[in-house]
Amino acid sequence: MLSNDMLHQVNRPARYTGGEWNAVRKSWDDTPVRVVLAYPDTYEIGMSNLAIPILYELLNRRSDVLAERVYAPWTDMEAQLRQQKLPLFSLESRRPLKDFDIIGFSLGYELGYTNVLNMLDMAGIPLLAAERDESYPLVIAGGSCVLNPEPMSDFIDAFIIGDGEEVTGEFVDAYREAKGDGKDRRLLRRLAAVPGLYVPSLYHAEYHTDGRLKSLTPSVSEVPMKVRRRLVERLPPPPPRPVVPYIEVVHDRGAIEIQRGCSRGCRFCQAGMVYRPVRRRPPGQVIQAAGELISNCGYDEVSLLSLNSSDYEGIDELVTHLTRQHPGLTLSLPSLRLDKSSVKLVGSLPTRSRTGLTFAPEAGSERLRLAINKELGEDKLLETAATAFGRGWTSLKLYFMVGLPTETDKDVSAIVDLVEKVRAEGKKASGKKPIIRLSVSTFVPKPHTPFQWAAQESEATIKARQEILREGLNRKGVRLSWQDPATSWLEAALSRGDRRLGKVIRRAWELGSKFDAWSEHLKPDIWRQAFADAGLEPGFYAYRERPLDELLPWSYIDTGVTEDFLKRELRRAREGKATPDCRTDACNACGLETTDTCLGKLKN
Image 1 (tube, rainbow, N blue to C red):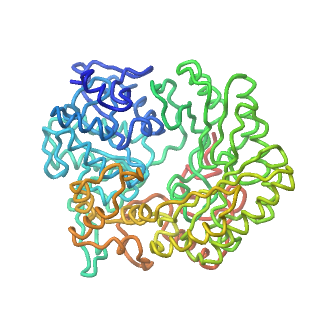
Image 2 (cartoon, rainbow, N blue to C red):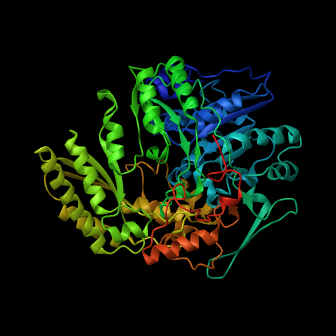
């Protein structure tokens, strides 16, 4: 199927050859259930994804399941496959995707949706779930995007909502019980009975004449009115033998998730809301996992992953233990809180581990930081910068957003003022002019957050605020990068869309959209045409503020965080009031306080 002549025609042929260290090959004929895990982006990005190796290990641990992998072919390989009339295949066995029982997509970014359609088409599989009978694989999806599954509901048979470690096994058991019935409503009803599984074809949507969602109700009695997000109470051990790529990937190192969830409550942050509550992996398990990654994969660099690594209880002791036990190991600590303790923590690492410092103030003014619940006084920020520069760092990377709810031009100008003060602190502390790198993204309102009702600012407003930064920071020593507003409105429209957007996504793909997450491939005009052809307006989804009593397309997905809590947080945002961290203060009654997984109840 895959010839050397084809590989000579493409960039990075090792993306498609498979056979990597620790890859699992099982007997096709002796394994009842065959699953291919699909990632709708390139091999280099997909191999850096944390979910795929977890599911790969969990599934292949079972004697009745084989799991293989497939990633989106780059345009050169797609051209070769289509020219040779060859179907998209898995890496391990190079079997066509159509031969598998189940195709499982990981959806972590809305701008990968057209790649899902492209991969199905390259596999010779009908795009619409309604057009696939039992001769085709069951197509499922999980990941953070499926907390609003509606935009992709035309194409996916079943969505797995929430943590996948436990529900994946239950899904496979349900599938085996019903396998042989064909992909009819009996199989789908059996799958829908598994807690955390959403089968969109078993629900019916109605709309008001003005386009708002009127209702989304089950079309059969057996399925629930709301689908509850699955939670694992204790994080299982990390995969001991993840696949090691032959080529450099985006995160070319070992990775250990030390903690899942965050209690800080930033109001713009979807991950902070939908991955609640905080679940901490015990230090002994992290230490064991690091040893396994070194011995089984040959890594000499390991990243300790969390939404906020600084909040991991005992992070200093953990880092000290790892550096002593593995003297040649390089450690990376992404997602550090902006304070002096973080600077001290990174400074305690061996010299080889001391990468540049990166912090995320998010907003320039203290007023706006309170509104988004990023409680960080300017004095503390400058003190942290002075500490960093005083300890020898010569550069600092800062993340900000524009277009946040309640933001004004004055708040944007405050970013310029703040950067000037940081530069002054750096010069005073080190005697040299520091290099400040600014990365400025555009706020995107996301489902299941307090800002899910907020409108995104128009492209014109975002460009004007970006210009404030360009003019104010046009000086040596400040390096500014920003996000294209066209990317942001599309992300907002897709993330807050309903199931009518399936027609838009399909039309955009038909017009040539793919790899939309790559700036050189994103074509906003194609998407505008796709919306027009579907009779829909992108501003209805991106730029419209939603009334608090509007039925939202994702309202039937229960994350455990209540709507009352989100509304209360939105009100506090408008009042400029912070909500304290429930780890160190009183319970904030977000809805998870009644569960066994709530902080304080779960012991590691």
